Image 1 (spheres, rainbow, N blue to C red):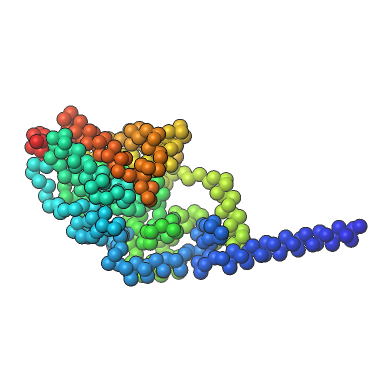
Image 2: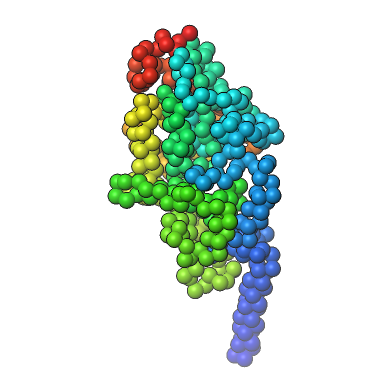
Length: 410
């Protein structure tokens, strides 16, 4: 009897070992040269190996098709739109300075027109609609209908963090002396602020370049990876990432990688770890003492201060993702609530979610890549046109370039 139990136990143990070994071999067989990628549709997080192979493939495709690239390498900003291009099957136009526009702008604003400049990510660039449907142009039309001569410049770029938007102001936007600067606040960008290598943060995303990253030294901002690594420099950095000086500033590597764990050589253990972490629901920290909060606050504060010092007015608008709009209407607390409260209490602020009813959660109002469709864009333009018109007529926004609104009113 004892012998039979022992034999059966040994069989069970061997079966378990063989099964686990088989799963481990299957993970490796169905993986790819980078490892830690996909198995039966499940993505293993890139916490153990940097995806050098995939990064190299993407970069090679970029070099081969650079004339048709939607985003191009930018030494100061990481990436930007190419100048004088017709992107997204001809629906997305850029002018000679690489901003979304169908015409040119003089550096000196027209004496009889208000100049408005927009900064932010793809929700400002408006990647899911054509040029005429984008809220930048819609805002210009709405202001004209309100009797205000205005031109709207759209400096938004897909994938930008708050820091990149601020740097785009410093590199380009301030030269055009806007009277009003509108910052499109998409709070997920708090994550992008602490990231340098987008291949680590979003391995499946289209942003293959590195980006500049602000860091806080006490109350002061400084920037690392500026100028940004060239495409060739990226591959070299990934190959020896542990020893690269920028690795210390990459939040999504430094805080999560598993190289130090004895079990991390097993793909099965990495899969189980990721599965458990996903089900535990490891919360991202956006509290006032977190790096995300403090860095985002410092960037917006610095951005607003520079705009105001240049004689412009600074306005923020919260541009919620679809999931956050759904959460708002379901009464769920926003993970970014404390950060949004700070911005609302400090600056002129528009919470777009308060103007979008629950019907706007439906897919028909959103584009193919989950950005705003034409109807939501019209709402954004209406709200901003009303806000700008009211602040001008009530003299609550500073317009240092004009004595009174008669100079740009028609």
